[in-house]
Image (cartoon, rainbow, N blue to C red; front, side, top):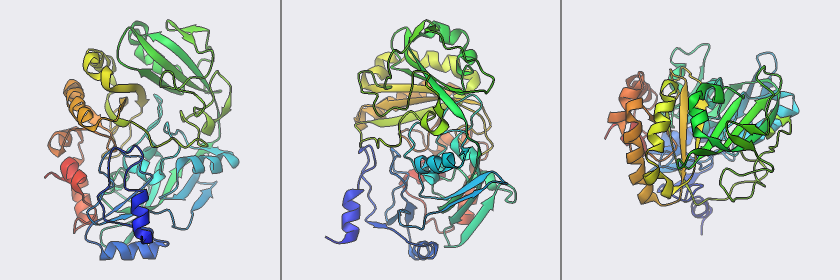
Length: 428
């Protein structure tokens, strides 16, 4: 077996195992020049990040490119308060490096193992009424476009910068990302069980505004939310009062996992114990790599003004959703100005679904979910399983056609297009 064949056999499926990559070849360039040559010589090529997407966004009929052998990049500019990393870097490793220097990112996703470029390209996010998605921290991107040219775009100097950031791999292969940073901070995580829906919906803004980052975990059945996670940023002016009972629920007496009955050993520290930002903002600890798991994920973001109505609609679908669901999570994402960001132009509420790994059943149930959320202009997460196509997505993004024009300019031969992008962005 050749080395190339060995690599493909190891990475033929994504992290969750629900999607099998069809690209016949995986290449590992060791320099930017080698990457440029690969792009110039390819007819179809796409970057493969950490494999945490649940759909075909990273697939190709030609070459998949992994940046895992590129020279490491970590450059901190203390005056500008930025950090530059390689596109293949992951957030967990970056977070540790920043924390060692007394710096922080504003937020992190629930998993710290995901790649920086991949998370940015799909508008992946954490939570918090005032926290935009991870892509909003980007101030500079370096990418190899469809002609093999190395391009640098910056928020300060590039007029269409906001179109480049959430690029979904359609604009090029990102070699460097520069992110805004801030001084490190301390977070304490408080978990409550069986919070009452009636109290949550009575003043939803007060619930999500109580802490720096808030997550509600539910199976959409019954009168209570299974778990409410409050990530309190120490000293940010929000309440420090986390009593034994809150919103009709009770404080967890021991650490819990979002999935009932699952050990919390790989979850970040709870029970109100203060710790560094990188050890509390994710739900899961970096030192515990999640196993390739029996799950499929979907997620939809709606304008925050529709939060209560959307929650009510989803609760009404419990009979359809709950039997296929492991757990759902509700989070807040602040608005940004990025063209294809799922929170672009509007403060948003994100409805995340972790399904059992039954691909056919999930593909059917997301149609039902999308129909229920359609009146609220729901935008699906680009890296997860959804049914919507370009014709239904285009009206949700004011700069959708501008993005397509940008892609045509950066990739005139369509080297970065694949079946997923044709269906969801460019049209069949």
